[in-house]
Each structure stands twice: as structure tokens, then as C-alpha cells.
Image (cartoon, rainbow, N blue to C red; front, side):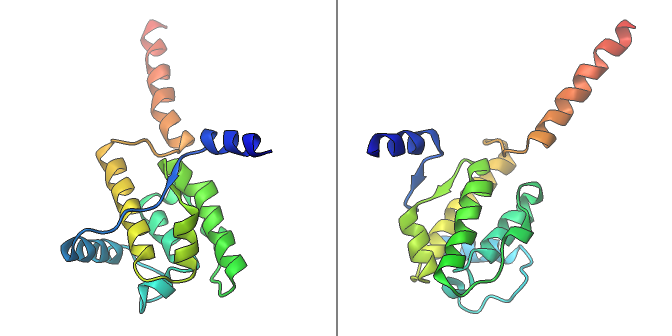
Length: 160
């Protein structure tokens, strides 16, 4: 049993505990980055506000609208609904960015542990910036297939 589970984990995108934010400047830069995205509700206490995953999904949606289906996420107070939202994010969205949130980070975020969501947001920020630079491909099959299809169609046209 343990071996089968281990094989599945190895096939998935690796999850790691998000590293600590190193300086106050880095933390302020992260807060400024979060403020760039219009969110559905005001941020009052970032740990509590992000605990249900909805605002995190909105941030991902702000940068990659094609990979997030916002109807999958609902505001939640219960631990089980919060975990459902985060597991949906991990399974349907973040893996397309080559990232999975570690279970320990999920537990800390859902409990609104101070600093937890900032660490995970900082990893997301790094992934977004890497995608914007072209260092990673975001899992959008329809978007990446379109340019190839048009270039394949353009080559045979002059031969006719």
C-alpha cells in the first residue's frame, strides 16, 4: 500500500514547504504585488482573508485567467470547505504552474497561522514572474497549440 502511494506522489509535481520571506522589504514587495490584483473582498487580516483559498484563486486568475475557473471556489468558514478549495487549487490550477502547496503549508494557511499565506504567496509570485519571463510554460494546451497550428497551416499554403 505504501509503495503505491509513493509512486503516485513521485509522478505528481513535487510539493515543498514554502521558504520564509527573508526581509521586511521582500514582505512589503509581496504586499504591493498582491495589491496589483483587484480582489472581491477587502484585505483586513491577510492570514484570515486568504484562509479559504478564494482570494488566492483570484490572484492566480488575475495573471492566468485561462487556468482558473472561479466558480469552483466559494467563501468558507469550515475546515473541510477551506481544504476543498485549496485541494482544488492544488489539483486543477497550481500543477499547471509546476507548483504544489505542501500539506503543512495548507494546514497552516487554513488555521490562519501568521506568515503562512505570505510564504505561499511569495512562491506564487516567483512562479508568475517566471512565467512572464518565459522561464516556465503554463499548462494551457489550447493557448500553446494555437500558434503551432497556424504555423503548420502557413507552410503548406505556398506549396499549393
